[in-house]
Structures are given as structure tokens and as C-alpha cells.
Image: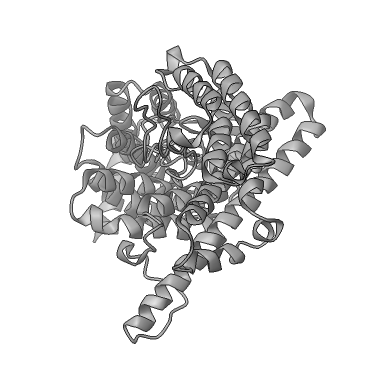
Length: 468
């Protein structure tokens, strides 16, 4: 039962005074590395919904009656939304109010009043209306005044905000257009085609701060663009049940676009980190390496742990949803490595994030028939999740991992052991009011028969022999 909590809202959007606009918010809404919108998913037919907080994933899951134990593993392939992207902080930066002409400040203030409210009180269409009017004024001014040129930080930040609002509205077509607009304002065609050009810029110690911030914003929006393509592909796949070929073709194109942008982001981050790490090696008179250490202390100062682990997580779940576990597993493991110091020190957020990652690694092991590896991952993950039983992410991780362990035991023919895990998952799911998890656990208990005493004794003997 892979999970996805959210790494959303690394930084939150706040209003200062009516005359001020807002500082860093996220192109990807980051908050504590993993948000608590947890959904368990099951598929008896052809689809599984992978939901990450605001964003959804759908992956084709085919039922194989010859391997019924795989059904629960596939069905649980996404329950904690570990990160909805965390290249945040650089996505939507509104500069000081003094940067904007008075009419723009008024529109931004009005848009903020419509957007920066509790979800049930938001007026997103009004926010879009105000923000797009403000952008039109800035673009008109920018044609003659370089202070408001299309690629300056306070303008690209506004475009990123517009993209985020469209995304929250569910208007994915306009969200995609807006994210692309951000990228085209910040990057040239060569930089869009080859992120290595940006690597050289990021490694330049003399790079102006605004340019670095804009590159990081572009990285965040590219990651968010990949997510949005995935979400739209999910919609097409749902429609394909009724619309057949046209919808299937559209979904396939969007999945391909999502992959392109994830690869683009990974290339930019990994090449930058690799070069930075080898520079550190040379300073210590050590030989360069092909693989950096993934010790968080060796990251470039402009790449936070949240940024890198969020990207790795999002890309990994994309690869996993497309059965590319050979790409997904290393990314999940590297994200786990980056969180390791905090986990070892008992830092609650890192412990619970690591539990989430463990649930994905366990699920990948189940999906690749590595049952011994899956069992180890689930047991290790449960040990982490139990450390903070009041933390929502740890609680949801506990449910997912317990269910995963039940799936492992079911696959191994250990029905009684599987039922114990499924019952425990059901009890905790009820306590946290996770209806999706409850449904999965109930279905599992109905699917797995109660063993007779003789069968139970045989299972116990088998377990004892295995441990011996």
C-alpha cells in the first residue's frame, strides 16, 4: 500500500499588510514534506487511482487471476502522498509591493483576498480574473520598461501563481499553458532543450541572486508541469472507457510529456549535485566519483533536502505507475538516504517521511515478486511508523505498511498471518476514519479464507522452519 503524503507548502503564503504582496509560495504547494491527504486505492478491473493530495495519478492495473495476491499489492499502490512536489519556495514569488504599479498592487490584493482563504471560502475564478488582469498590465509595461520585463522575478512569480490557481480549479489545460509560460519567460530554447546549460549557470558562484531564484522557480514549475500532465493523463484514461481510441492517444501523449519533464528536472538536479560534490572532493584532495554520497551536508546550498527528496519521490511514483521499478527504486532509496540523518536523530518529520518511502519500496518489492525484500521493507517501515503514533503521516504509513505485510503473507500462502495484518490495518483505518483503507482491508479479509486448525499448524511450522 504505497503512500503519498505531501511535501507541500515548504513555505506558506502569507499576507502582511494590505499594501504588501506575498513572499515565497510554491509552484508546488509544499508544506511539511508529506501532506495528510491519504487515499487507499483498489482496482478489480483495469485502473487504479493514485492520488496525491490535490493531484491524482492513474495507472493501468490488470487483474491476473493466476496471481491473485498481486491484486491487493497493485490496489494499494498509492496511499500516502509523500510529496506533491517540493521544489517549492521558488515557484510563486511576489516581490515587495513597491515593485508593482498602484493598479497592479490593487489587483494582487483583491486576488489574494479571493485566493488566500480557507478552501470553502475561496473564490478561485475571481482570483484568476484579478491575477490575469495584473499580468496583462505588467506585460504591457514590460514591452517598454525593463523593470517589468517578461522574465523578471516578480512577473514570473505572478504567472506561477496563476498556474497554481488553475491547477486548484482543476483547469488543467490552462494550468499547463501557464506553467509553460513561466518556463518560456525564464529560459531560452537552448536551456529548455538542454538543462546542462543551466547546470553551468547554477555552479557559477557569481550568478546573480535573481537569476538563480528564477532558475529554481523554473525547476519547480517544470516538476509541477510533469505532475499536471500526469493528472490530465489520468482524466483521459478515465474517459477512455467511454471514448476509446482518441482518449487513449491523448493519455499516452500526456504520460510521455510527464516523463520528459521529470527527466529534465532529474538531469538538472543530478548533474548540478554531481559537479558540486566532485568540487567538494577536490577541495578535500579526494578523487572525483561517479555517484555522490547523498549526504545532505553535501548538497548545494540552494538545493534543500525537501527540494531533492520531493523531486525524487514524484519522479519515482511516476516511474512506478508505469512499471519502471528499475528507475523508481533507486530514486526512493536516495530520498531515504537524504532523510537518514534526521531519521537517526529521531526527527519526527523525517522519521514519518522515511516510513512513507518504505511503504513505496515495499510495494515495489511486492510488484516485482521480491517477497523477502517486501517483508523486510514493511517491517522496517512499521518500526519507524510506530515511533510517532499521533503523527498523521506515521499513522497512514502504519496502515499502508500493515496492509502490505498482509499482502506479502497472502502471497506466501500464510493466510492466518495475512488476516492478522489485514485486521490490524482495518482497526487503525477505522480509528483515523480512512474509508478507502477500511474498504481495502474488508475486501482482503473477505478474500483470504480462515484456515483450519491443521492448516494453521502447518503454517506455524513453516514459519518456524523459515526463521530457523
